[in-house]
Length: 419
Image 1 (tube, rainbow, N blue to C red):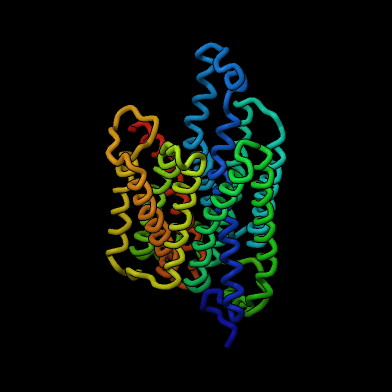
Image 2: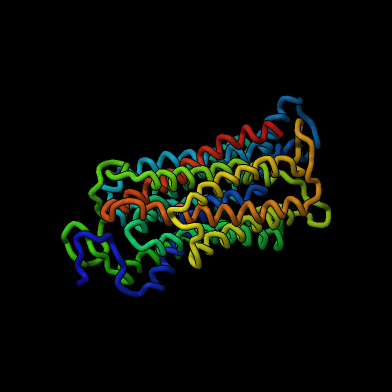
Protein backbone atom coordinates (compact mmCIF):
# COMPACT_ATOMS: atom_id res chain seq x y z
CA UNK A 1 0.00 0.00 0.00
CA UNK A 2 0.95 3.62 -0.24
CA UNK A 3 0.60 4.14 3.51
CA UNK A 4 3.55 3.11 5.65
CA UNK A 5 4.18 3.47 9.36
CA UNK A 6 7.64 1.96 9.42
CA UNK A 7 9.36 3.07 6.23
CA UNK A 8 11.04 6.43 5.82
CA UNK A 9 9.46 9.19 3.79
CA UNK A 10 9.39 8.10 0.16
CA UNK A 11 8.47 9.74 -3.15
CA UNK A 12 5.70 7.94 -5.01
CA UNK A 13 5.95 9.50 -8.46
CA UNK A 14 7.56 12.14 -10.66
CA UNK A 15 11.04 10.94 -9.79
CA UNK A 16 12.85 13.09 -12.32
CA UNK A 17 11.03 16.27 -11.30
CA UNK A 18 11.83 15.68 -7.64
CA UNK A 19 15.46 14.89 -8.54
CA UNK A 20 15.68 18.22 -10.39
CA UNK A 21 14.15 20.13 -7.47
CA UNK A 22 16.68 18.68 -5.03
CA UNK A 23 19.39 19.52 -7.54
CA UNK A 24 18.28 23.17 -7.66
CA UNK A 25 17.98 23.32 -3.86
CA UNK A 26 21.47 21.87 -3.57
CA UNK A 27 22.60 24.62 -5.91
CA UNK A 28 21.02 27.17 -3.58
CA UNK A 29 22.87 25.89 -0.49
CA UNK A 30 26.39 26.61 -1.74
CA UNK A 31 25.71 29.36 -4.28
CA UNK A 32 26.03 32.18 -1.69
CA UNK A 33 29.42 31.00 -0.40
CA UNK A 34 30.75 30.38 -3.90
CA UNK A 35 29.65 33.79 -5.18
CA UNK A 36 31.44 35.53 -2.32
CA UNK A 37 34.53 33.34 -2.59
CA UNK A 38 34.84 33.69 -6.37
CA UNK A 39 34.45 37.48 -6.14
CA UNK A 40 37.56 37.73 -3.94
CA UNK A 41 39.32 40.07 -6.40
CA UNK A 42 36.43 42.53 -6.16
CA UNK A 43 36.51 42.53 -2.37
CA UNK A 44 40.31 42.71 -2.22
CA UNK A 45 40.36 45.65 -4.66
CA UNK A 46 37.97 47.56 -2.42
CA UNK A 47 40.25 46.97 0.56
CA UNK A 48 43.03 48.99 -1.07
CA UNK A 49 43.88 52.27 0.62
CA UNK A 50 42.42 55.08 -1.56
CA UNK A 51 45.21 57.48 -0.61
CA UNK A 52 47.87 54.91 -1.35
CA UNK A 53 46.27 54.13 -4.69
CA UNK A 54 46.16 57.78 -5.71
CA UNK A 55 49.50 58.97 -4.40
CA UNK A 56 51.41 55.68 -4.36
CA UNK A 57 52.39 56.26 -0.76
CA UNK A 58 51.56 59.39 1.14
CA UNK A 59 51.12 57.94 4.60
CA UNK A 60 53.14 56.49 7.42
CA UNK A 61 54.27 52.90 7.17
CA UNK A 62 51.93 51.81 9.95
CA UNK A 63 48.86 53.28 8.28
CA UNK A 64 49.71 51.65 4.99
CA UNK A 65 50.08 48.25 6.62
CA UNK A 66 46.45 47.97 7.70
CA UNK A 67 44.81 47.69 4.25
CA UNK A 68 47.72 45.54 3.08
CA UNK A 69 47.07 43.15 5.95
CA UNK A 70 43.35 43.06 5.21
CA UNK A 71 44.04 42.25 1.59
CA UNK A 72 46.63 39.57 2.25
CA UNK A 73 44.54 37.79 4.89
CA UNK A 74 41.14 38.29 3.26
CA UNK A 75 40.87 34.68 2.05
CA UNK A 76 41.60 33.26 5.50
CA UNK A 77 39.17 35.55 7.34
CA UNK A 78 36.53 35.02 4.66
CA UNK A 79 36.81 31.25 5.06
CA UNK A 80 36.76 31.46 8.86
CA UNK A 81 33.70 33.76 8.91
CA UNK A 82 31.96 31.36 6.55
CA UNK A 83 32.75 28.00 8.11
CA UNK A 84 32.44 28.69 11.85
CA UNK A 85 28.83 29.98 11.58
CA UNK A 86 28.13 27.07 9.24
CA UNK A 87 29.23 24.66 11.97
CA UNK A 88 27.39 26.45 14.78
CA UNK A 89 24.08 26.74 12.96
CA UNK A 90 24.26 23.21 11.60
CA UNK A 91 24.58 22.05 15.20
CA UNK A 92 21.69 24.30 16.29
CA UNK A 93 19.54 23.00 13.45
CA UNK A 94 20.00 19.48 14.78
CA UNK A 95 18.05 20.59 17.86
CA UNK A 96 15.52 23.01 16.34
CA UNK A 97 14.46 20.77 13.46
CA UNK A 98 11.92 19.12 15.78
CA UNK A 99 10.50 22.49 16.85
CA UNK A 100 10.49 24.61 13.69
CA UNK A 101 8.65 23.23 10.64
CA UNK A 102 10.86 22.20 7.76
CA UNK A 103 9.03 24.59 5.38
CA UNK A 104 9.93 27.59 7.53
CA UNK A 105 13.55 26.53 7.89
CA UNK A 106 14.10 26.06 4.17
CA UNK A 107 12.00 28.87 2.70
CA UNK A 108 13.03 31.34 5.42
CA UNK A 109 16.71 30.62 4.83
CA UNK A 110 16.34 31.15 1.08
CA UNK A 111 14.59 34.49 1.61
CA UNK A 112 17.27 35.69 4.05
CA UNK A 113 20.11 34.68 1.70
CA UNK A 114 18.42 36.44 -1.21
CA UNK A 115 18.10 39.65 0.82
CA UNK A 116 21.79 39.59 1.75
CA UNK A 117 22.74 39.28 -1.91
CA UNK A 118 20.41 42.13 -2.80
CA UNK A 119 22.07 44.38 -0.21
CA UNK A 120 25.52 43.28 -1.44
CA UNK A 121 24.59 44.25 -5.00
CA UNK A 122 23.42 47.67 -3.81
CA UNK A 123 26.62 48.19 -1.81
CA UNK A 124 28.69 47.95 -5.01
CA UNK A 125 27.74 51.60 -5.65
CA UNK A 126 28.30 52.73 -2.06
CA UNK A 127 31.76 54.13 -1.28
CA UNK A 128 33.27 52.86 1.96
CA UNK A 129 36.64 52.95 3.66
CA UNK A 130 38.58 49.65 3.64
CA UNK A 131 38.02 48.68 7.28
CA UNK A 132 34.24 49.33 7.40
CA UNK A 133 33.86 47.56 4.06
CA UNK A 134 35.85 44.60 5.40
CA UNK A 135 33.61 44.40 8.49
CA UNK A 136 30.45 44.70 6.38
CA UNK A 137 31.66 41.94 4.05
CA UNK A 138 32.51 39.60 6.91
CA UNK A 139 29.11 40.21 8.55
CA UNK A 140 27.42 39.42 5.22
CA UNK A 141 29.42 36.20 4.95
CA UNK A 142 28.44 35.24 8.50
CA UNK A 143 24.76 35.81 7.69
CA UNK A 144 24.64 33.88 4.42
CA UNK A 145 26.50 30.92 5.89
CA UNK A 146 24.37 30.86 9.03
CA UNK A 147 21.20 30.59 6.98
CA UNK A 148 23.00 28.36 4.49
CA UNK A 149 23.78 25.94 7.32
CA UNK A 150 20.12 25.70 8.29
CA UNK A 151 19.17 25.21 4.65
CA UNK A 152 21.83 22.57 4.02
CA UNK A 153 21.17 20.58 7.18
CA UNK A 154 17.41 20.66 6.58
CA UNK A 155 17.85 19.42 3.02
CA UNK A 156 20.16 16.58 4.02
CA UNK A 157 17.74 15.65 6.79
CA UNK A 158 14.91 15.51 4.27
CA UNK A 159 17.01 13.57 1.77
CA UNK A 160 17.99 11.11 4.51
CA UNK A 161 14.36 10.02 4.63
CA UNK A 162 14.37 9.42 0.88
CA UNK A 163 16.34 6.95 -1.24
CA UNK A 164 20.08 7.59 -1.47
CA UNK A 165 19.61 8.83 -5.03
CA UNK A 166 18.03 12.00 -3.62
CA UNK A 167 21.16 12.87 -1.68
CA UNK A 168 23.15 12.67 -4.91
CA UNK A 169 21.30 15.57 -6.64
CA UNK A 170 21.88 17.80 -3.60
CA UNK A 171 25.60 17.07 -3.74
CA UNK A 172 25.64 17.51 -7.51
CA UNK A 173 23.74 20.79 -7.25
CA UNK A 174 26.24 22.03 -4.68
CA UNK A 175 29.00 21.20 -7.14
CA UNK A 176 27.28 23.18 -9.88
CA UNK A 177 27.02 26.19 -7.55
CA UNK A 178 30.76 26.73 -7.71
CA UNK A 179 30.88 26.25 -11.49
CA UNK A 180 28.01 28.70 -11.92
CA UNK A 181 29.74 31.29 -9.73
CA UNK A 182 33.08 30.86 -11.53
CA UNK A 183 31.47 31.29 -14.96
CA UNK A 184 29.61 34.37 -13.75
CA UNK A 185 32.90 35.83 -12.50
CA UNK A 186 34.71 35.12 -15.78
CA UNK A 187 31.86 36.79 -17.66
CA UNK A 188 32.11 39.82 -15.36
CA UNK A 189 35.84 40.05 -16.08
CA UNK A 190 35.19 39.80 -19.82
CA UNK A 191 32.70 42.67 -19.86
CA UNK A 192 34.81 44.98 -17.69
CA UNK A 193 36.95 43.66 -14.90
CA UNK A 194 38.06 47.09 -13.75
CA UNK A 195 34.51 48.42 -13.43
CA UNK A 196 33.00 47.69 -10.00
CA UNK A 197 29.56 48.31 -11.50
CA UNK A 198 29.86 45.02 -13.39
CA UNK A 199 29.53 43.25 -10.04
CA UNK A 200 25.99 44.58 -9.64
CA UNK A 201 24.97 42.15 -12.35
CA UNK A 202 27.16 39.45 -10.81
CA UNK A 203 25.44 39.59 -7.42
CA UNK A 204 22.01 40.11 -9.01
CA UNK A 205 22.53 36.84 -10.87
CA UNK A 206 22.89 35.14 -7.50
CA UNK A 207 19.59 36.71 -6.38
CA UNK A 208 17.85 35.29 -9.45
CA UNK A 209 19.25 31.82 -8.73
CA UNK A 210 18.00 31.99 -5.13
CA UNK A 211 14.53 32.99 -6.36
CA UNK A 212 14.59 29.96 -8.67
CA UNK A 213 15.39 27.75 -5.68
CA UNK A 214 12.45 29.28 -3.77
CA UNK A 215 10.00 28.49 -6.58
CA UNK A 216 11.42 24.98 -6.89
CA UNK A 217 10.82 24.33 -3.21
CA UNK A 218 7.27 25.66 -3.49
CA UNK A 219 6.65 23.13 -6.28
CA UNK A 220 8.08 20.20 -4.31
CA UNK A 221 4.85 19.22 -2.45
CA UNK A 222 3.06 19.00 -5.80
CA UNK A 223 5.70 16.71 -7.24
CA UNK A 224 5.93 14.19 -4.44
CA UNK A 225 3.70 12.72 -1.77
CA UNK A 226 5.43 11.71 1.43
CA UNK A 227 4.38 8.91 3.74
CA UNK A 228 4.44 10.18 7.34
CA UNK A 229 6.04 7.72 9.74
CA UNK A 230 3.92 8.96 12.65
CA UNK A 231 0.74 7.28 11.48
CA UNK A 232 -0.73 10.15 9.47
CA UNK A 233 -0.54 8.19 6.24
CA UNK A 234 0.18 9.79 2.90
CA UNK A 235 -0.48 13.42 2.34
CA UNK A 236 0.99 16.71 1.33
CA UNK A 237 4.45 17.46 2.54
CA UNK A 238 4.21 18.94 5.99
CA UNK A 239 6.61 19.35 8.86
CA UNK A 240 8.94 16.40 9.01
CA UNK A 241 8.96 14.77 12.44
CA UNK A 242 11.50 12.30 13.71
CA UNK A 243 11.42 9.95 16.65
CA UNK A 244 15.07 10.13 17.62
CA UNK A 245 15.94 12.05 20.74
CA UNK A 246 18.36 14.94 20.47
CA UNK A 247 21.18 15.16 18.00
CA UNK A 248 22.43 11.58 17.74
CA UNK A 249 20.57 8.50 16.46
CA UNK A 250 19.68 5.96 19.14
CA UNK A 251 21.43 3.17 17.23
CA UNK A 252 24.92 4.14 16.16
CA UNK A 253 26.67 1.47 14.11
CA UNK A 254 30.38 2.05 13.80
CA UNK A 255 30.16 2.60 10.07
CA UNK A 256 27.94 5.67 10.55
CA UNK A 257 30.79 7.27 12.47
CA UNK A 258 33.26 6.14 9.82
CA UNK A 259 31.21 7.95 7.18
CA UNK A 260 30.81 11.02 9.40
CA UNK A 261 34.52 11.30 10.22
CA UNK A 262 35.41 10.62 6.60
CA UNK A 263 33.31 13.46 5.22
CA UNK A 264 34.73 15.70 7.95
CA UNK A 265 38.29 14.86 6.90
CA UNK A 266 37.54 15.35 3.20
CA UNK A 267 36.47 18.95 3.77
CA UNK A 268 39.16 19.68 6.36
CA UNK A 269 41.79 18.94 3.71
CA UNK A 270 39.90 20.81 0.99
CA UNK A 271 39.17 24.03 2.88
CA UNK A 272 42.61 23.91 4.49
CA UNK A 273 44.17 24.83 1.14
CA UNK A 274 41.26 26.09 -0.99
CA UNK A 275 41.12 29.02 -1.56
CA UNK A 276 43.57 30.38 1.04
CA UNK A 277 46.58 28.75 -0.66
CA UNK A 278 45.39 27.77 -4.12
CA UNK A 279 44.22 31.30 -4.95
CA UNK A 280 47.66 32.76 -4.15
CA UNK A 281 49.36 31.35 -7.26
CA UNK A 282 50.54 34.32 -9.38
CA UNK A 283 49.00 34.69 -12.83
CA UNK A 284 51.32 34.20 -15.81
CA UNK A 285 51.43 37.23 -18.16
CA UNK A 286 49.67 35.34 -20.94
CA UNK A 287 46.67 34.51 -18.72
CA UNK A 288 46.26 37.92 -17.12
CA UNK A 289 43.20 38.31 -14.90
CA UNK A 290 41.74 34.98 -15.99
CA UNK A 291 44.29 32.57 -14.48
CA UNK A 292 42.92 32.28 -10.92
CA UNK A 293 39.21 32.40 -11.92
CA UNK A 294 39.80 29.67 -14.52
CA UNK A 295 42.57 27.42 -13.15
CA UNK A 296 41.59 27.70 -9.49
CA UNK A 297 37.85 28.33 -9.17
CA UNK A 298 36.40 27.10 -12.47
CA UNK A 299 38.67 24.06 -12.70
CA UNK A 300 38.02 23.08 -9.08
CA UNK A 301 34.28 23.43 -9.36
CA UNK A 302 33.93 21.68 -12.73
CA UNK A 303 35.82 18.62 -11.54
CA UNK A 304 34.25 18.74 -8.07
CA UNK A 305 30.86 18.70 -9.79
CA UNK A 306 32.07 15.85 -11.99
CA UNK A 307 33.09 13.86 -8.93
CA UNK A 308 29.76 14.47 -7.20
CA UNK A 309 27.81 13.53 -10.33
CA UNK A 310 29.74 10.28 -10.79
CA UNK A 311 28.00 8.87 -7.72
CA UNK A 312 24.76 8.86 -9.71
CA UNK A 313 26.41 6.37 -12.11
CA UNK A 314 28.30 4.13 -9.69
CA UNK A 315 29.18 3.99 -5.99
CA UNK A 316 32.57 2.32 -5.78
CA UNK A 317 33.83 1.37 -3.26
CA UNK A 318 30.70 0.07 -1.54
CA UNK A 319 29.28 1.46 1.69
CA UNK A 320 30.87 -1.33 3.76
CA UNK A 321 34.28 -1.23 2.09
CA UNK A 322 37.38 -0.38 4.12
CA UNK A 323 38.85 1.19 0.99
CA UNK A 324 36.65 4.29 1.22
CA UNK A 325 38.16 5.72 4.46
CA UNK A 326 41.63 4.82 3.15
CA UNK A 327 41.00 6.83 -0.02
CA UNK A 328 39.76 9.72 2.12
CA UNK A 329 42.91 9.64 4.27
CA UNK A 330 45.19 9.64 1.22
CA UNK A 331 43.89 13.09 0.22
CA UNK A 332 46.15 14.62 2.88
CA UNK A 333 48.96 14.47 0.30
CA UNK A 334 47.39 17.44 -1.50
CA UNK A 335 48.30 19.78 1.36
CA UNK A 336 52.10 19.64 0.87
CA UNK A 337 51.69 19.41 -2.92
CA UNK A 338 49.90 22.76 -3.11
CA UNK A 339 52.20 24.33 -0.51
CA UNK A 340 55.17 23.45 -2.73
CA UNK A 341 53.57 25.01 -5.81
CA UNK A 342 54.35 28.58 -6.86
CA UNK A 343 52.31 30.20 -4.08
CA UNK A 344 53.26 33.81 -3.34
CA UNK A 345 54.30 35.45 -1.12
CA UNK A 346 56.33 32.79 0.71
CA UNK A 347 58.99 32.93 3.44
CA UNK A 348 60.02 29.39 4.35
CA UNK A 349 59.25 26.61 1.89
CA UNK A 350 60.96 26.33 -1.51
CA UNK A 351 59.02 26.20 -4.77
CA UNK A 352 59.26 22.61 -6.02
CA UNK A 353 56.48 22.63 -8.63
CA UNK A 354 57.13 25.93 -10.38
CA UNK A 355 55.37 25.12 -13.66
CA UNK A 356 51.67 25.97 -13.78
CA UNK A 357 50.94 22.56 -15.32
CA UNK A 358 51.69 20.89 -11.97
CA UNK A 359 49.25 23.24 -10.24
CA UNK A 360 46.53 22.38 -12.76
CA UNK A 361 47.15 18.61 -12.53
CA UNK A 362 47.00 18.71 -8.73
CA UNK A 363 43.82 20.80 -8.89
CA UNK A 364 42.07 18.27 -11.15
CA UNK A 365 42.74 15.27 -8.87
CA UNK A 366 42.15 17.38 -5.75
CA UNK A 367 38.72 18.53 -6.89
CA UNK A 368 37.37 15.32 -8.41
CA UNK A 369 38.36 13.33 -5.31
CA UNK A 370 36.69 15.93 -3.09
CA UNK A 371 33.39 15.74 -4.94
CA UNK A 372 33.31 11.97 -5.37
CA UNK A 373 34.38 10.92 -1.88
CA UNK A 374 32.29 13.53 -0.07
CA UNK A 375 29.21 12.59 -2.07
CA UNK A 376 29.74 8.87 -1.35
CA UNK A 377 30.00 9.53 2.39
CA UNK A 378 26.88 11.72 2.42
CA UNK A 379 24.90 9.12 0.47
CA UNK A 380 26.00 6.16 2.60
CA UNK A 381 25.73 7.80 6.04
CA UNK A 382 21.91 7.88 6.49
CA UNK A 383 21.71 4.26 5.30
CA UNK A 384 23.72 3.09 8.33
CA UNK A 385 20.86 3.62 10.82
CA UNK A 386 17.29 2.46 11.33
CA UNK A 387 14.76 3.80 8.84
CA UNK A 388 12.95 6.05 11.31
CA UNK A 389 16.28 7.63 12.35
CA UNK A 390 17.33 8.45 8.79
CA UNK A 391 16.54 12.17 9.01
CA UNK A 392 18.56 12.60 12.19
CA UNK A 393 21.43 10.65 10.62
CA UNK A 394 21.30 13.01 7.65
CA UNK A 395 21.54 15.97 10.02
CA UNK A 396 24.49 14.32 11.80
CA UNK A 397 26.28 13.89 8.47
CA UNK A 398 25.63 17.55 7.65
CA UNK A 399 27.06 18.49 11.06
CA UNK A 400 30.29 16.57 10.42
CA UNK A 401 30.50 18.06 6.94
CA UNK A 402 30.29 21.52 8.51
CA UNK A 403 32.79 20.52 11.21
CA UNK A 404 35.24 19.61 8.46
CA UNK A 405 34.71 22.98 6.81
CA UNK A 406 35.31 24.82 10.09
CA UNK A 407 38.42 22.78 10.91
CA UNK A 408 39.73 23.42 7.41
CA UNK A 409 39.19 27.16 7.85
CA UNK A 410 41.11 27.06 11.14
CA UNK A 411 44.09 25.06 9.85
CA UNK A 412 44.29 27.23 6.72
CA UNK A 413 45.93 29.94 8.86
CA UNK A 414 48.59 27.45 9.93
CA UNK A 415 49.23 26.18 6.41
CA UNK A 416 49.53 29.74 5.12
CA UNK A 417 52.05 30.68 7.82
CA UNK A 418 54.17 27.60 7.09
CA UNK A 419 54.69 28.73 3.50
